[in-house]
Length: 438
Image (cartoon, rainbow, N blue to C red; front, side, top):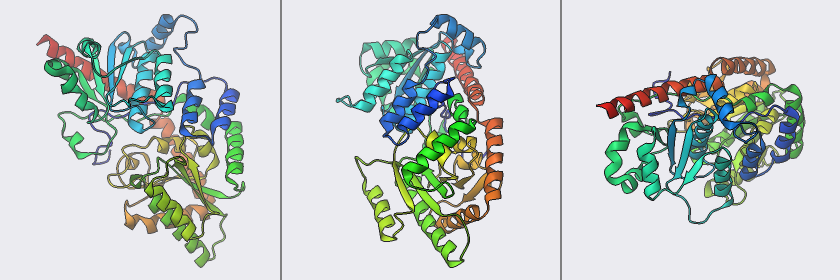
């Protein structure tokens, strides 16, 4: 493991959604929402089969599932989840995935959003509706009911330091009773989390749904053709994509600088390579930030608008993973905490160009499943050279992609994640029970 922990207190976990056993329907849904906004991407997931959808006997289903799951011991346990907000950002979505994993084995799950907007928007409504469909009870953050649930719960799980601000104002004198059964489910690279008494590291795993698409050659081909047509690129062109929310910390600016340098290197050295494109997935056409405006200005200034494509943010990442040739994971600073998109890309047999920081160093094997470069401005030139290298060597792209896929199957599947989560929850439950008896 890397010297800097990729997760603090407890690692983030969760797949991208429940399994659907009909690839054709899944494929049609993916194509339908591939170029849509993030809310549509969420609706796709809601349209897929829900293990708690009410068909058959839910109790019998949960018993059967629990008996074969590493998380089976959580059946009938009451778990309170407290999120700092309810949005399409990583923290809430990953905590929701944990909620669904627990519901799948028959846990009672209650959700509280500490900082909920007074005005219910489409995203908040959709996310709450999805949780209710999974059998997750949604409660207001304040009130006696929230206190009662916290006191009765077997576990209380919070997903950021901000969520921790719910404790004192709401629980007040009851805080000492609840503290022994609190687990912090953190996915942020912040130093103060690493100072806690005990830290667990839990790597994520790819959902069965995503693996189903990744391993279906027909589905991948159809998605590839559809996305490439929508972007206006040819089948023989090479696409280098960065798939993250657009922000300075994710490094889209440095990626575009490196891409521009790569174009100059190819021209200067007169290299015979396929036409290359940069794809930035994670834009927001409705609320362009100053940073995104700067990205677009850079593209215009350097007249590379025919080579750079901005795509609105979406949770339906499978179509883009099927369409591209190389994933760029360019998170800056301490790096990506983990980077689920990295293991998802590897499931699609894509090589990864990533920063040598954070959780990326625990996923990508430099020179084997991808190539690493330094974070910061000093990483621009090495990233440019790595882009040219993979553009010039098709056999390396294929070899790295195959090795990455093998690494996913060995380490980053949903059942691996469930086993790692189970070990953490068992330990926390044991310590909480020991404290209550003392």
